[in-house]
Amino acid sequence: MPNGGHQRRADEEELIDAVEDEGWEYYADPPDWIVESATADGVDQSAGFDAAREVYQGDNYVYLAVSSVHGRDIHVFSQQKSEYHETTSEEGVCPNCQAYVRRYDEDDYLTCHRCGWQYKPLKERLRNLF
Image (cartoon, rainbow, N blue to C red; front, top):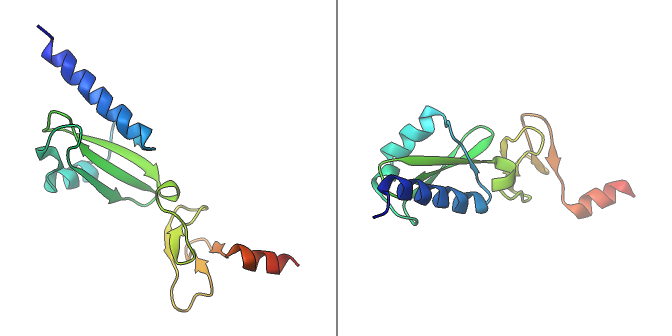
């Protein structure tokens, strides 16, 4: 007869490995606000390998809360915002300070109003060189 505790641990490790394979980094000691938000959203109430997931935005990181395989627990993973969000000419993440940025009507380019970084299309950058 298999050891139930061992199987649970093996299942959780399999889940963690699968999420890490998607580009997320396991966060062993996540901030309380993420766990509290995920619990309030009911993430811990589902179970299984395809259980509930929720994404939460921090200042510099994006967090993924995933229900444990057997329920009643939450695993948290993180990714830098610059890896999670694709930068376009309208919105993205500043590569310098990791702030989420979007283009406002008065901006000529996508501009980080925190550090001054600007995202210019390649054509515009080449025009400025020559």
